[in-house]
Image (cartoon, rainbow, N blue to C red; front, side, top):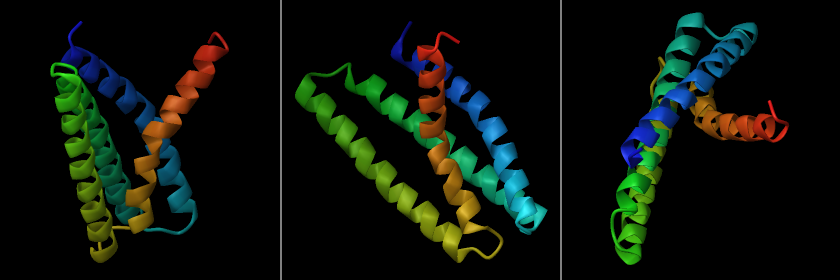
Length: 127
């Protein structure tokens, strides 16, 4: 299996985990009185961006292993810096745009970590 095949497979697995988390977050935002359209659009934007970041991390890692260690490290660092700046721009845009709920855009950025921790805990228990 090539590096990009692994990235695609893991991105699909991440998407399957993000869907229920996004629905749960949507329900919480609705219960808190946020407009359904605003919450839905914001959560969808945040989840899509989070999935894009996850894929970019995978692509960067898959590309880096094809090069000598020093060059691979530079590739990973450059990708990290780019994703960091891009995330800052997305958060600022979410705060500035009146049709987005900033918290609903930011919360899905934590979904990949939650999914990875959850799958690791379930895997350890033999589930």
